[in-house]
Length: 103
Image 1: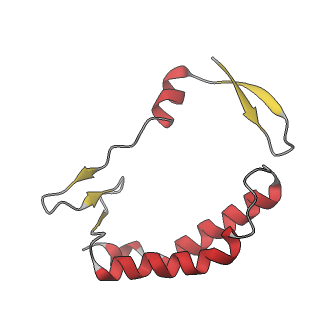
Image 2 (image 1 turned 180 degrees about the horizontal axis):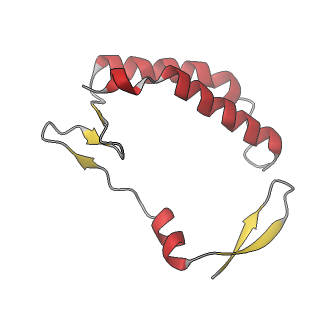
């Protein structure tokens, strides 16, 4: 199937894509839970979102992301937006230590 994709120059380009992959990658993710009811992610990492520590880490992350997110203009798909998104991903990676989120 051919798919129109908006590139970073704001132009649409046609790309060839496998229909099964498009459906798989755009389908709702169903996360499994362990016996305690905690979500299990791809790497068998679990997270208890009712934990006060986990909630605090998420709030801390959001606080650190706010200055970058406030600069984002989602109506313009450009390299500035992409770089801000990369910086956000780096902050999340630095702040959320999966080793300590496993409860």
